[in-house]
Length: 207
Length: 207
Image 1: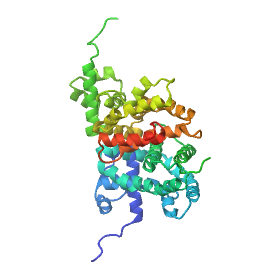
Image 2 (image 1 turned 120 degrees about the vertical axis):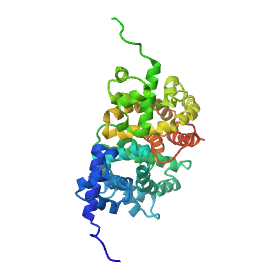
Image 3 (image 1 turned 180 degrees about the vertical axis):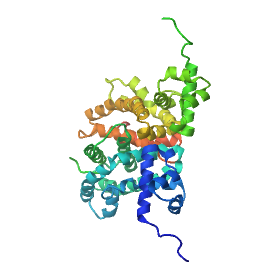
Image 4 (image 1 turned 60 degrees about the vertical axis):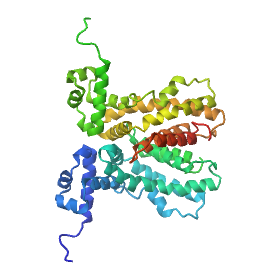
């Protein structure tokens, strides 16, 4: 097959995602049309459609990309890469503790919080966006903590009657709750919140 | 002072709030203008402005009213009314347990979940709505659980190192997390979720 058109350009991808994030923050989902995104990114609508086949897919990718622009990966992606099932509980939570400062920095950014609010706000108005965000962003973060809590129960660090699924819902929920509440938050405040919640959940050693 | 105009009508209040809720669910915050709300409620714009001095105040009240239409009060309002600081922990959590089925019914309603998503989605685009919702709706629910957890620690039902503030963030967060995720939820599923989270938090007796 003869190759038609220019090769996919990583620079164009990045410009489109950045334009979509900016428009989402400034104007909400209603204001982030493919046409507006293309204009701001300095590309044609065809260039956008060549990469994402719907506005919903583009906006979900834009929301997901909001953590990529910051240095490093989110704490849970780092955990997923490094957590070895042979590790002890202490080894696991030491890795978690080391990853939290960078995670706090990412989570506390104004852009991340604005896009998170957009994702949740789209829950009923644009269910495809929220479904894609949930599947690609929330579920993997949830999955990665399961072996830590299972190990905590197995080693007797958490009581045998611990409801691991409930603890996970509570841990992720507490982060969402803090990120979505009104007002500002500094990375240091977010780090303090993460440490208190993770410690209470058994995802960090006792103080 | 001579009374001017008709007395405030509870029926008009209810019609305006219902119209605002419907428009929020159908069209989002951008689609719920004072003009549209007035038209759907069958009242004049002046009638709306006589009651709420801004669109944001009206929409916050509409979101807050979403639990009122269902029978009874939410579980935390019931708790606030009935919780006596002289009660034992067992007496407190018995009241909580009794209130959960009705709370689950309210929380699982499609309208409540849609409006909750709108409130959180407005976090950056319309901060006044979210601020009013948070202050009038979330903070009071949080406050009411503090004496129960404090009593649980005092009676040795929770460990002395329990971080009560973190547990509250996790409990409310877990409810938001479940209510905002994609897909449907039945009242029975919501009740199961509430019971697991409340039990893990120490807000219900052990199974």
